[in-house]
Length: 565
Image (tube, rainbow, N blue to C red; front, side):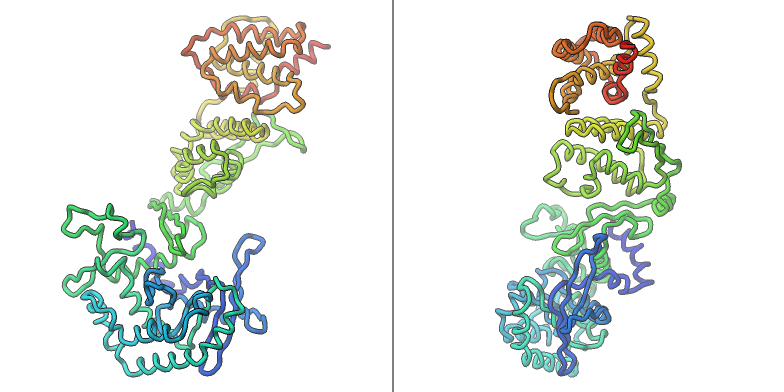
């Protein structure tokens, strides 16, 4: 996987360089100090969500002026100076110094206030002066490439000068820091050119880029180690070791590959949730302590990549108002879906009540109803494959198999409007995909004709199911409850088999028969037809046809007006 990604990302990085990362690199909120000779400038970085939910970043000076002109200066040096992760600090195991060079100092304010300068001198300045404490065989091999630079007299003098400058202003910085939230950072920067920052970063990364240097091996003068990204190996994870191999580690990579992997994951960590980050690739990631973890990856063939970018459906989907759904503005009009993101939003809103897109990965939000959460778990894989990878086969299988469950879920939650929307959408999608659906008008006219002529020939399964839905809805409307809730239909939908459904209808009929006049010939004929339907313990009924009967215009209200006339 990672080599496929690097091949594509590498071309992008070669073209744009570190600008590719820095364009989306966010500075952390907190206190920023810029030391230029004897001048110390104080800035405060803040961020807030805008109206469109995007994060806006501000850098204020001591006069509370937004200094966006300084943002780029800090961003480059901040990126160069960051630790890879908290376990790779120079002052482990205390892990309070979070920068990687002598040109900066990054600490949580609460730690900074309780730290004396001698500790900073010992754990940072003295350590990077000669890197003598990095004395394992692999570390010595890594540092061998930097010996000429490390021991340059100018570098040693620069380290000493920076240490003396910081020591002199350290108490003043602590006084300034007391005025800011203790959980935020203080980040101190010396005004040094970018080339020096890059050189110091290179040494740190070479030493810390692998998961753990104890796993590294030297082969013909080159160092191979265990990747630090999307891979963990430690005493708590012995199951990741390959016990039967000479080297039990999952895989080993060269330093240049490890560096490319780090650059890629740096870039990935700062991207918003999108799937078109790289040509021909689908990527999904999440952050774990600011570190990007790839949770899903797939290669998109070139033909599908074009669709992915255009996101236009081969043929528009007509969403038809089969059930004659109305709102305050009257009968809802049919509408067309022409693009995949539009279909994704419609599916998300109507089937999932807006709960799918934010729950594509990991655990479903705990406050979502358990039954809806289970539906998300069972169906989201197919939705991801279609909406993010343009593979629609599973999508239509899921619509056929689970579409009805969404309608039932809305009824259970007493949302009859959304239940009708869901059934309309399911029928529209099946029809679009070439499947057969119930012709509601034809079925309704056929049933009406039989009832008016007292035709008692045996019903088909589709006719029985539809007519049962019509009868149940009419009977439940006779309930004397103040509020007639849609979830009264749910017990009938849980019924296993046609025989049991007949028994439930019979019981409901006798419960409400006092409210049904004997002269309602069509209704009484319908009940007789349904109860005469031959069904044994193995007989089933069609749930969709039952729902269409229950949720479409009820023929008995129309017939009642005619009978009264």
